[in-house]
Structure formats: structure tokens, C-alpha cells
Amino acid sequence: MSSECGTKPGIRRVTPISTAQDTITALATPLGEGGVAVLRISGPQALQIGDAVFRPAGSSSRRPTEAESHTVHYGHVVRNGMRLDEVLVTVLRPPRTYTREPTVEISCHGGLVVARLVLEAVLAAGARLAEPGEFTQRAFLNGRLDLAQAEAVADLIHARTTLAASAAQAQLGGALSRRIHAVRDDLMSVLAHVEAHLDFPDEDIAPDTGQRLRRRLEEAATTVDVLIQTAHDGQVLRRGLRAAIVGRPNAGKSSLLNRLLGHDRAIVSPEPGTTRDTVEETAGIRGIPVVFIDTAGLRETEEAVEQEGVRRSREAAASAELILHVLDGSEPLALDDAELLRTWQGRPVLAVVNKSDLPRKCLLPEGVRSVAASCATGDGLDRLQEAIESLVWSGRIAGEATPVTVNARQADALRRSADALRRALATLQSGESLEFTALELRLAVGAVGEVVGAATTEDLLDAIFRQFCLGK
Ligand SMILES: Nc1nc2c(ncn2[C@@H]2O[C@H](COP(=O)(O)OP(=O)(O)OP(=O)(O)O)[C@@H](O)[C@H]2O)c(=O)[nH]1
Ligand SMILES: [Mg+2]
Image (cartoon, rainbow, N blue to C red; front, side, top):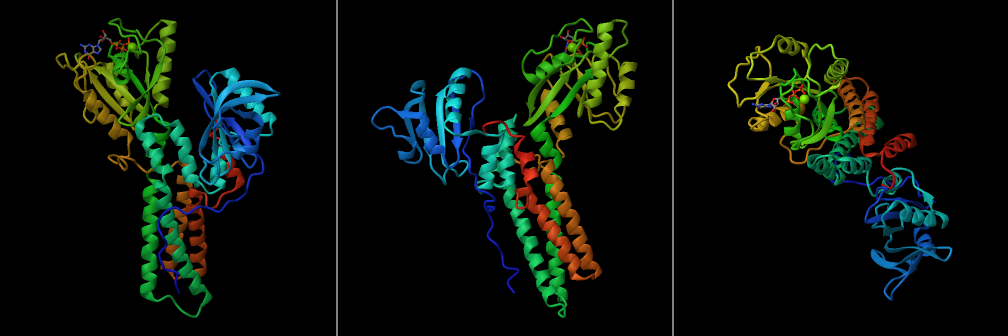
């Protein structure tokens, strides 16, 4: 019985589900004015379509079907005998291409009109316009990437901080996939063991074997739990979070926004009631993309515009995932502020006691998490960033240079797997028929496999890849 034999660590590829018949194309660069635009063509007819639109110029340039793989050729894109643009064409033959299909990339001049004309020529030669994410979907279907890696491509494109980008790079490189495969392999070997016993129902599992299987399931459950717990930080890293800067007029909210952004975004003045509308902008705080929202100072007012501003301030505070309550530290705590501090009950809030360059008169009630700072001198802003970081991160991935985190879809699959694992353990404990153990284990293996796409439906794949941008 070799069910316990180890399997090689590393990423295994899912076998191709389908081989695409049609050749797709899209601009891989954003539409707009730019030095170059890159049009990607991928599919069985990519090289022939390349031949149809490209006229090589110069002695070393070749038609795509005659070109060697990974070579670049100079020439023109032509349609109906008319030159549309001077281009460089890159010819990539499988298997070393992004989609594992024959691929041609045309680098033409940027700009809305030229790129569009070249795209139309390629479409006229028989390619079909790609759906968003379809290139990456093909890379997945052809076994070039697993699903967790494919999702990392989207994360990488959307990354707003270097930490988010390096986390996406690590996942693209297989950091998450390797962990998932290790757990899945382990569960499958336990399952094989259990199933072997089902084939010989007269033989009981020896007590020490039973013990060992239980321990392995517990270890797998722990690994899965640890990954599930990274979901919160993963969401923060991927989507960022919204932080509302609120407080009474003149506390220094706009000054704080400008300090955090590192440039003068909002108007600062000694006049109370300067900020009327909310002002938002993103900044990276120790690798966390944070959307800071500066708001109008909270006070009673008869003025209609300011009233609306105050209403928006309250709305921003209500929907924010983090509240920075700014107080003027050079004044005794105002009644309004004391009351406001009480309303934050249970919310993630940080009191920023500003103007620390002036003598401090503001005393905070017990138990309020606070940082003293001066937006005038910059003093205390480091501590503020540190406090934001520790408030936002669950602490599980803090300190890791490239954190491995799961997204919402992956966390959902892992939760189902963890539940099934727990039920499997319970059946082993209670001495129920091993049939039940095997049943739960199969569910656990299946759910873990969903993370890397070992078991997926077409609907799920469509839902995932349609979130990509066009041309990726
Ligand atoms: N001494 C000192 N003055 C500060 C500091 N931070 C802000 N100020 C001053 O406080 C005044 C108000 O600053 P703002 O940033 O406009 O305050 P605000 O909370 O946005 O005010 P409103 O938009 O009116 O609600 C300005 O004159 C700033 O120069 C600080 O750390 N020390
Ligand atoms: Mg302001």
C-alpha cells in the first residue's frame, strides 16, 4: 500500500480543458496617446494573420510564419495595399508564450487612431476581439498558470503599492499555489489510505495508524486556517481601505491630509470652516493603499453649504474602515470632541492630537488610542503611520516582506474545506463508518483544489476572468 508515499513539492499543472479554435486579439496597452501601443494576437492562426497584415522591410525581417520564435521584425502593417503604420512585430511560438498558443505582438505607434486602424486590419484578417482577461484565461486553460496565479496577474495590474505588487508577484510565482498543493497532496494521501480500508472492510485501521491520520488532518486544518486568516489582510492589500479624517474646524485635518500625501492637496487656512466638501486621495502607508478622506469640520452651523459639508463628513465617517479623529492639542478637550469620541464605540479609530509643537492642554479620556503629532513640524507622523499599520493589519502578515494572502473567493473555498476537514475528524473520533470520513475528505480535497482551479466550472472561470482588463 503506497498511499503514504510523498509527492514532489512544487506546482503541477492542470491538464488542458479545451483547446481554443479561434484566434483572439486586443490592444495590450491602454487606449490613449502614448509612444507605442502593443497589439497582441494569440491562437492557432496568429502567425498566418500576422502574415496577412505585415509586410517585412529590410533584409533581416521575415513574415511571421517564416520567422523563428522570439524574434523581432521591422516593417509595415498594410490593409488593401495601404500602409497603416511602421511597426515592430514580435513572433512567439509555443510553448514559451503567455497563452502557450502561437502569438504575434505588433508594436505600433500609440494614439487612438493608428492603434485602432491596426486593430481593425487584424480583425479583418480573421482574428476575433478578445474578451477582458481572455489571454490569461487561455494561459490557465493551457496549463501555463493555475487559477491562483491567474488571479495574481489581475492583482499585479491593479496593485497600488510596492508591497501589494510584490505580494502579487510572489503569488504569480506560485507562493500560494505551493502551499495549496502541499495541503491537497496530504489530504489525498490520507483519503487514499481511508479508501484502501474501505476496500477491505474486515480490517480495522490500526490504532496507531488512526492516530497518525488524525494528526495529519489536524495539521492540514491548521494550515488551511492560517491561510483563511490572511483574507482580511489580503483584502486590505488588494483593495486598500478608506480612512476618514474628521474633527472640529481648525483642528488641522487638511494639514494632516497634506502631510500624509506628501503634497498640498487641500486648502489650509486659519479660518475655521475652510474645507466644505470631502477631498479624497490615495497614499501608500507602509505598503497599505489608504484612501484618505479629508472632511469639513464638524460643528453646528446655519449655513446651508456648510451644513451639507458636515452631513458628508458624518457620512464619510460612517462608511470608513478607519477613522482619524483630529484634535487641537493646544486647547482643552472640547465638549463636542468628548462626545464624538464616545460615538466611535467599537469602530477602528485613532485620535490624532495635533499641534504638538504648541504647549499641550488637551487631555483625553482613559482608553482612547491616540498619537500626538504636529502637522506644522512633521513630528509624530512616523508614529501615526505605525499606529495606522498596526490598527489595520491583523498582525498575521506584518513583517513579512512578501505576504501570502488569499482573496475572498479563495477564502470561501478554504472555509468549506476547513469545515469538511472538521467533520472528517469528528467521524474518525466517533468511530463512525469510514465511508463518512472518505466523503468529507473528498469534499475537503475538492474545495482546496478550487483555489488553484483543479476543479472549476465554466461560470466560475468566466466570473473570474471577466474582472480583468481588456488585453490581458
Ligand atoms: N501650530 C500648529 N498649527 C497647525 C498645525 N496643524 C495645522 N495648523 C494650523 O491650524 C489651522 C487650521 O488648519 P487646517 O488644516 O486648515 O484645519 P482643518 O481641520 O482642515 O480646518 P477646517 O477645514 O476649517 O475644518 C491652520 O492655520 C494651520 O496652519 C500644527 O501642527 N501646529
Ligand atoms: Mg480643512
